Length: 144
Length: 187
Image (cartoon, each protein chain N blue to C red):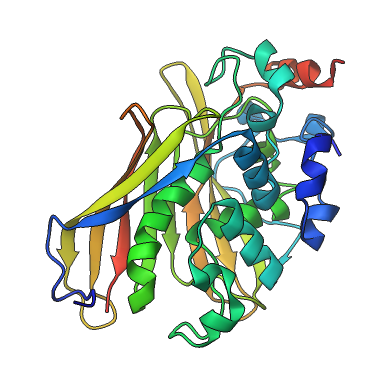
């Protein structure tokens, strides 16, 4: 059954995605995002600044984690012409190189604004391999 | 290049042209206690969206969605062509604010507590994006200093594509910021 606003139900779980985060992945995100903050890239500097999140380790960009969370929404909605219109997230725990991040979501609200404007709210999350939440938030998706 | 290991990862013309050493020129970065709220600016640099930019970002976030990666596929969909991953504004924001206002987002020692982003239209190849900035808030919570701007991403037709509120926890003073910079310049 094709995804559409009329038929989607509250409580629908979106398929999870899983991403392996290592220093090479962090490096690639730095290059693609132009965010070369040393907290993500410079291990020698980070060891001196170990009062920052992650202690003596570099950490992944928060925006990379949010990108994974957004991918949960787009993988689900864009094939049917759905459009992501809002992403709001809070980072709870830093993501360290070597972690495996699972992201998912659940439809929690339906907003009836008319054809082409009807949207759902999806509660989204990211958690590490230990089941600890690293980010939580919500997205809005216009569905046909 | 500050980090030699990244050199082989550069694929686009903008990536190859960008200053990657965030410690360099850090003395010119805006600082929490000096910023006035309510001021508005336009970033000096514009961002012309090319297919290589969109594809590089989607690969970096490991998203195989062909709408973000495959021009021929995307042309045949309701979207009519490549669209950028929703978080692509991250690249535009950093690229455009390399020089001038809002450069505090480059501050060594700054870190990200979370973000609110409203997306009106996806970025597409051929968009020429102007970034407009407004200092919207600064506050202290549990001993940490937060700084927030509003960023408006506007295309060449005047269409607002994204409005967002980047927020970072930052060193509160220039003296504090210098500690992070000094540590980075030491050999």
